[in-house]
Image (cartoon, rainbow, N blue to C red; front, top):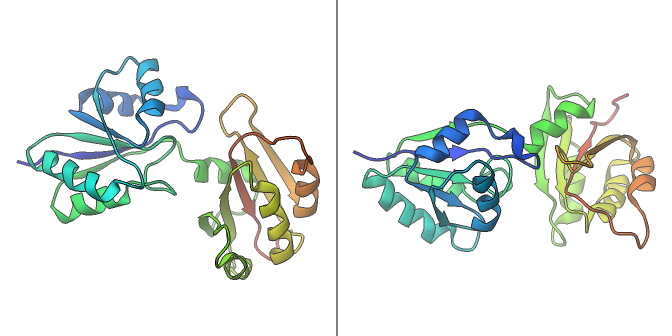
Length: 227
């Protein structure tokens, strides 16, 4: 009899956002497959969870998937977690889930925090139709991708790092025009901030010259014609 692969959402910032069900699963499985054992270790320590951890990341995911599936076929139970949020959403992990599904191994979702849904819920922008882009291409195909996104009849959601957020806001302004946006920074953390306004005003808010901007960003852009 095969084991079970649990796909477990973890907090995106505030450690208190881990669900009771997730705590139960992380305590009960044989192993926790962690994107970064140091990051996950802090979460486990906070909840006094002592389950053994296995490591996987984007560079070893194919090999890790095969090893994990061998364990699962022997009847072991594994919880898949990412550094923050829901695994496989702009994070490694989908190859593990794909192979487990191919091998007929039961897969269970343990839902919880996700930066996409958290940002959309506080954006004040329409969410009946939205397109999740994740991280934009850094160089090759970036302009073409932005032109494609600008033409979509839907709200667009983009992830960005503090190192490239100003450049991305400038590129978005050029490709989309001065549309309404919500820019979420440090969601669920102490200095959480959500800016709402035009792309021009967002640039004024976050372009701080030499001063370093901190925090991870979610940028939500309204569809053309929204007011």
